[in-house]
Length: 86
Image (cartoon, helix red, strand yellow):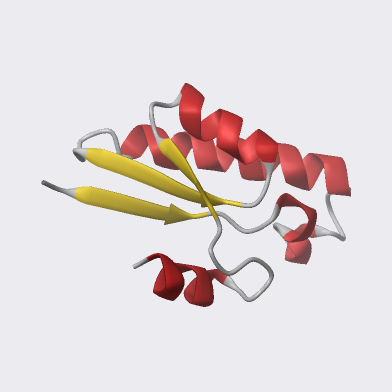
């Protein structure tokens, strides 16, 4: 069985480097659109899990056929989340 584990940064802090060009709502929208694209690209895997900290990210995961998994290391960074999840 092939698994894909997609870490999702909390939306409140996602895409912060784009702050000079995009406001918080635009960065949130962009992050969710990018998540939807990644989930779609992962459809060839047997199971796709999205590590998430936000209800909106969980909804995008479910809508794309992925399984939302609450982030096991919230606020500690993507690598810590991946380490804890694996």
